[in-house]
Amino acid sequence: MASRKLIIPSQDEILALCEAVAGSTFTHTPEGGLPLFIKFGPEVLNEARTQQYMFDQAAAAADPHAPRIPKIHTSFGDYKGYIVMEFIEAPTVTECVRRDEANSEHLYDKVAEALKWLLTRPIPANTLGPVGGGSAQHLIFWDQVAPRPFDSAKALEDHFNRALSLAPSNRSITVNFCDEPLTFYHSDISPSNFLFDSNTDQLYMVNFRHVGIYPKSFASLPFHVAGSSFLKAIAARVNYWVTPNFSAMCQAYFLLESVCGWDVDYGSENEDDESEDEDDVQSFNSY
Image 1 (cartoon, rainbow, N blue to C red):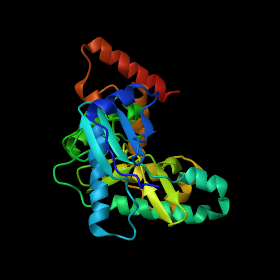
Image 2 (image 1 turned 180 degrees about the vertical axis):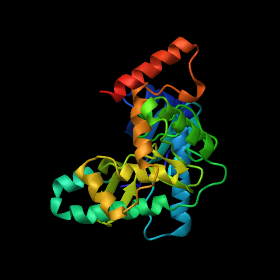
Image 3 (image 1 turned 135 degrees about the vertical axis):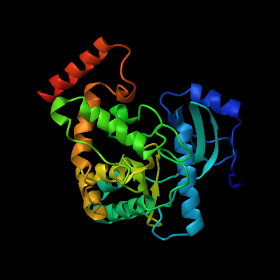
């Protein structure tokens, strides 16, 4: 049987394939070619840049602690982007634990080791949010997407302090991000975002949408919010300390949720609208 080779469809072919499927991810195998994993949607190119950076980091260092990262074959688009990448034929950690619960501790160790590696990668210059810039995706934001790109820790700090100021009882509570180092974060620590090949004992990290660069508090937060037993097991292994901003960030999260992600830094179009938003926050606080 002839070996299969890498065949990358043209951009027009990729667009046609995407139009014919439901959802935003699928596997495609060109005739005579290797299977490909295709992902598309809004701001997917932000994810592609971050994934490529991590792939390069893992390949350059040949670090035994590094997870495997799927190779990106091509990406294109603008606001709506398209990624064609290596298809990894391995089950998710979710599936592995379901099949062999006795091996769960080993899998948790592997995931924790991969996250420790990611969180300590060097930071590219002049980047906040995804590698190369753009709106960050992080669980702290309404709908898990920042209302806009932030160009500095100070701009991010001002955004959260403005949110905290919306509730009169919280006016004395503030965050301080400017004194924190920037670091990579991962805010979607789910077993479905890790694949495991039991034949090689190799862990793969997939889905870089919720990976980016922000002050250290944003890396810490996902390990300390209420979560699944999987997240608790990983958090115990990573042992990422709670930062002084934790309580204020949690309060800011609920305030931003209560106004559905309204970009508090820009205010409203008129004073009546602003008064209504403040009433909504006060009602939420007294709930």
